[in-house]
Length: 178
Image (tube, rainbow, N blue to C red; front, side):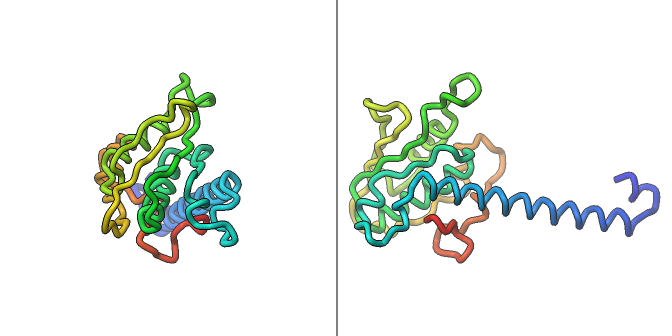
């Protein structure tokens, strides 16, 4: 930056540190908002009084960013596979509020599902274009997380990503709504 070139190394270093702190804070706030929207759209997801298969039958991931929706969809598929479900429904939205009427979450999730080994097949719900019917692989699935490269195609990114900074294998940093 200009201060570095002007020989103000300490000021430059302080600004860089402050920038990193603000970026971390921004990421934390986005994650908090994503968890809040997920919990708002899926009120019984963590309700242990509801049977597990009923909680996992349908999950609503619209109102999230594409990256956040993919992270929650990934965790949901893992939970469904571990619970032995044969199918689930992902509500992605119809794209009514997206630029040009595109359905970015739906398209990204379809790509993600095509690369997920826990999914035997998926198709758009003929009765509702904003939903995806997901049929899960039956067998000894452990519900492994997808690698960064598998999700990369869904975001049309050039480098691997870490979804929400979440370790979907059970780290304490995982979304509390999952």
